[in-house]
Image (cartoon, rainbow, N blue to C red; front, side, top):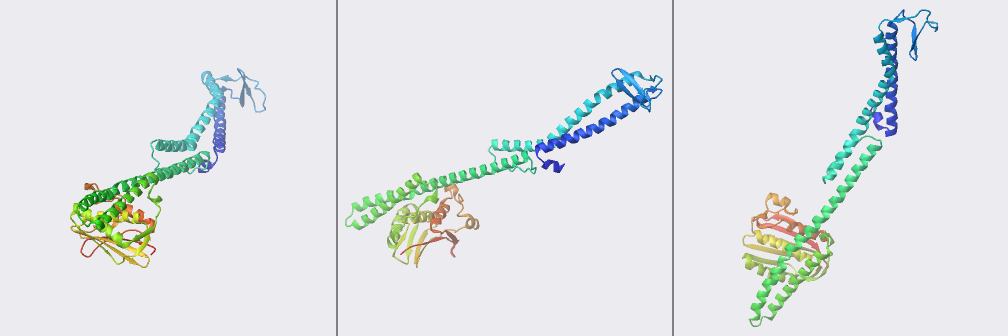
Length: 386
């Protein structure tokens, strides 16, 4: 039976009906012989054989010639019934055999595979592609089931890619709309500082620093809005390396976080072992630093420090806080998308994940740990040109 399953539909059909007709022929011959024997036993005297010619009964001897004496029927009603049964038995036997062969053929050869296809179509209609059609038959319908399953896999892969693309775009949107708050906060605070400085004498240099910080914040807003307009996801970010003085970056961070300090009342320090000029993408690095410093400010008890260390052509940033540090779970999951220990206060948990995605452009990543004093330590390194 298993071998028949592997044949084509046409060959299997011939085999099923051929076997059915052969069995029907054998059954018919057996039934016909039994009826003939019974009819002979109903004749007296019993002839050697008999034939019907129309309504006439002819009895034959062993020589094949008609008997000289007339045989009489001992049970005419039973004899007539047997004659009718013999007449219709071929129709019944062959008809039942063909119907039975068709039923078995449908049940074994077709029904299971059609049910499998219907199951797959119902699943797809319900937008569920997480299933698999397993069909081991090698006939045309088996090939159709395998092609259907291949189509399902292609659909699943296509929808998975579309879903991932949509997730990346949503992630980009959430990241940049979230990070717009930082330069806007800087601009707002800077305006207050500039208004105060304008009323004081000999504050030209401080006003210049404040305006530079505002220019930097405006540039970042322009980059974010341009990214939201043109990028499909963060992977499309193109590095724009420009000369950056580490001293100016340090001063900007200090000035920027003096504005944050008004809201958090936490100390902020920046250390650097170099004031050299380096080439890297300042907007990308500032975006990463904003995320890491914002996280540190949120969890620090009273102090956050940033350390910049330049050695050869590698620039390392280390952000420390004196909070409770990372929990064992956070050390494993902190950079996962949407992981957050502070969701109750509208923190979605995308900060470190976005920072990691951005650092992919430098083939770098964030390293998180706890200091000996218990606070959190987050660091990353990039290759720069002097």
